[in-house]
Image (tube, rainbow, N blue to C red; front, side, top):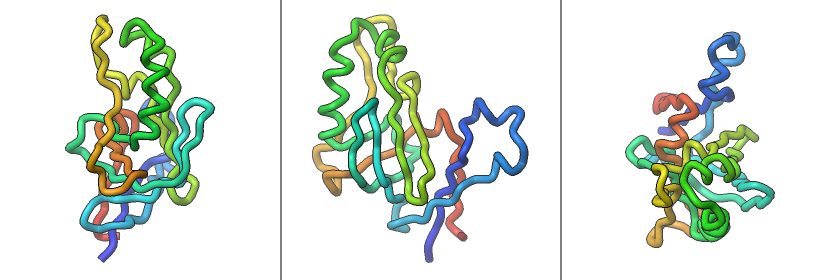
Length: 153
């Protein structure tokens, strides 16, 4: 039995005056029914684009988990700012292109957590991830998008 992770095409902020057609969720087939695992066609951070990978959509993860090569690109960007607030204002969004061409982005305001000090929490990398191109779309993804889980379809 398959399942479907339904990701809407509009961020929550744009839903106030949206039509019913605009609110139609976009289904993404699952690659692994043991997890809510989906195909990620590409990931873009600023001008840098990364190749395909696999990801899970997980309500129990408090941040985005990215492969170490994406983390290696983000680290110098955050090292160049003085505060978390400055990082949230200056860092680029992380844009996920999913199977079927549906894009979902997570702005720096969602993936940078911290206070006025320099102590920021942003994204993490898993040294023991199941694959080198593995992502976890955790809470920051849910803060911007309504995600429906439909295991029957």
